[in-house]
Amino acid sequence: MDAYDEGSKARHLPDGPDGSLPEGPASAGSTPDSTPCADQESTDQESTDQESTDQESTDQESVGEESTDQESVPQHHDSQAPTVQAPGPQVSGPQAPTADPPVPVPTPTGIASLPLRSQIVAALALAVVAVVACVHLGMVFLHVAPSNTVTKQHGRAIDDWIYPEFEQNWKLFAPNPLQQNIDVQVRAQVRGADGGITETGWYDLSALDGAAIDGNLLPSHTQQNELRRAWDFYIGTHDNDNHPVGLRGDLSQRYLRRIVVLRLDREGAGGKGAVVESVQVRSRTTNVPPPKWSEEQVSDTPVLRELPWWTVPEEDVTDARTEASAG
Image (tube, rainbow, N blue to C red):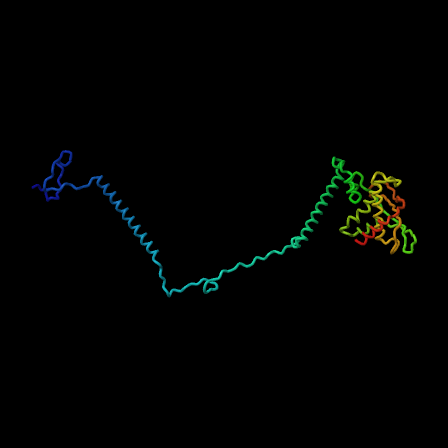
């Protein structure tokens, strides 16, 4: 026996010239080399990985089932464990529903607080006032606007609305602002309680209006403009001989007469119970002195313009006393 033959597990050297094993069946007493090839090793590795993956999936499913079982089992607490109560009052028995506090109803104010009939009357009154105000503004606009188709067709209606109380002028501004002081004065013939006729002195109505305005932060339109506008209206519709010019001459005369009669009644002309029979109006005009730095020379002599005596009708006296009592 060869010295290298030490048993069945002895390793034989290759006999072939290329170092490979000789072909043919191996001898009965020897065991072929059991070294696996590369393909066999990769197959074994994949099998091992697959088994590992299957094992992990099985483990995860087992853990999930155990967790589900754990959640489904009710938790039993120790009866002796302390119970923590929520702060606040504890109510025993079934709790009654809590009602919401009543919402306060706002108290109506203004027109809404009035009865239905009074609301209707107030609404109608406001509507009438709004319509009258819109009509008045429209009439004044048409009066001061340049001549147009509307003023040509309805000029008479516009003048009847405007004159004499709402006449407009622009003498305060250029080109010819007023540079004179005009005092309107009046005297009257009155019949006293004994039936006698007496003549009063001159009442300076412009000076009375000036005294009422002086120191008054909010003087009325009547105190500022009524008498002045009435006089401007009269001289604008009469010539220098006091003859009326145009259709508004008689209207301006009646308007001025009514105002002076009302003023005389306020001043108590002729004493208590006296009745105004006739009046005479005059104007006293003085030039406004120029400033000291001006070289302009103007006369400081007053210019008087006296109107004829006017007989006062009974209705003017009645209207004057009615307005005086209402004021």
